[in-house]
Structure formats: C-alpha cells, structure tokens
Length: 354
Image 1 (tube, rainbow, N blue to C red):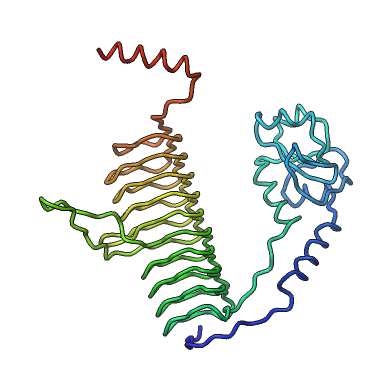
Image 2 (cartoon, rainbow, N blue to C red):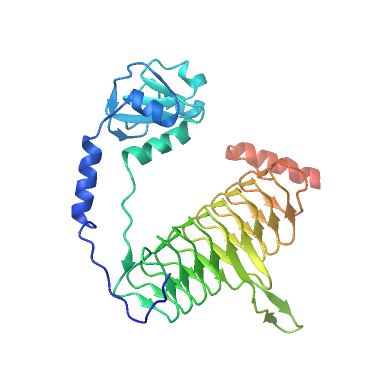
C-alpha cells in the first residue's frame, strides 16, 4: 500500500452507472436456469420436470411460473396450494404435501439465498476516491478501495483492498478498515477503531463513541473519559443506526462472525463472542460479556457487568438482570393475550398481592 497525498482525483469508470445497470439487468432477464442446474448448484435433489426453467426469484405469494421460491416452515407451507412458482425449494418433510416441481434441500432458505446471488448478482464494485471526499495526512489507502462523495477521512487512517466508505461517512484519526469491508452512508467511525476484513455495516452506524460513564460526586454527575478502543473482528454485520461504544479503558470487542440488526446498542467494554446473533433494538449494558453462538431476540435488555455463557438463546422482550451460566433458552417476556383476558389475569394478580 502506498502513502496518500493531500490531493485526490475521482477516477472515471465508463462501465459504472446507468449503462452498466441496464446491461446487467438485461442479462439477468434473459438467462434461464433449469431445475437440474439449480439443484446441482445448491446441492439439492431436483424432483419433477428437470428441464423446467426460471429466471427470477419471488415470494411464494408473488411468484409466477418464471420464478423460483422457497418454503422453510409449516407456517409458509399454507401458501403452497396457491403459489404459481415454477420451482420451489423446500425440505423433505414439507415436500410430502407438494406435488409441483421442486428442489429438496436440508436448509431451504440457505439454498434460496445462493440462488438469489446466482440469478441477481450484486452490482460490480467500483474503486476510486470521489473529488468531494476529504482525506487527512499520512493515510494508507489501497488503490482498489472506494471513498464516496463528501466522506471525511482523518489522519493516519488505513483502508484495505476493496474496502468501501460510502457517501457522507466520517472516519476519524487512526482508524483501521480491513480488506473488503463496507461502511454504509452517513456513518461515524471514531478514532482508533479497528475493523476487520469482510465486514458489512449499514447506513448510520456509530462505532467507537464515548460510553455512558458518569460518577456522582455529591452534587453533580461527573463525566468519566473513555480512553479505550473498539475492536471488531472479521465477517461482522452491523445493521443501520446501531451504536457500539468504545471502552472506558481497554477494549470493547466484537468477535468474528457476529450479526447485529438495526437500532441496537452495546455499551462500553462489552464483549460479544463469535457467531452470536443479535436482533433489532437490543441494548447491552457496559462491561457485559456474551458468549459464542448466542441468539438475542428483539427488544432484549441486558444489564451491565454480567456474563452470559456460550449457546444461550434469549427470547424477545426479555430483561436479563443476572449472569446466565448455563446454556439453554431463556425468557421473561409476557406474550400478548386478548385484552379482556389480560385485564382479568392482572386483576387476579393484584388481589393475590393484597
């Protein structure tokens, strides 16, 4: 990687833009794939007319004879009798109730995702630095990286090969961004944050901001400076408008393979283990450690300074106030009931309390 200068020129790429998009869409529309080809591609078992062709993907309820769709649960299976899909990817168990052309796969949704990438490939990557981007001094930026319009990159920043900083994003001093990682538009990456390879961050993420650290001195809340760092591993997904605080001292750390949904928050010094999945609107208090392969449901609130071991599932809307030291499924949420039934139950609860 070569050192950057203070002046950059936008590289013009004739293949990028409306002409390229039109060519890509045309090729997608005309290329047809047979059931046999798709079954081989996903490693499934094709059944029915192996010469049946499709050219697009769709939901079961919106599909046409030119579409391929999938069914991965009994809840979706109710649509099988009415779908017009030319091919359906489903499991052996669900296939027993379906007599159309299909592909049997152990994980239908995963197989379908591979078909999506095949029939509708993502846009080609473009490299270069937009003429409106602002680049600091002593940056190391690979020539294959992309920095979009009105992005601001601080001093001594490192940007890896095929990394992408989208429009309006601010990257502060001494940040490191690994190869092929993408930071969505209008995000803010605070100083000294380290981002691994092949990460995908949606628009509006805020990474490495100061944590919520205050101490009462008898008359007011005194701010405690957070001087630690945020370290994010490889192959991490972070959804739109999610925020992760840097450590007060030491590190906040997100390990490899973590998936975080939109509108989540991790406090200072939190640690998230490998391949843990966190659904939308989860809040994790400072200095809490969550293990590997955990699943945290939507709207879960986890207090500060506790530990959660590997292989724990916490169902949506739960509140975790103590450490969880055994693997398993946990819940503290109250499922919705008809209002009259709920009010009667609540009234009985209050009578017991009195």
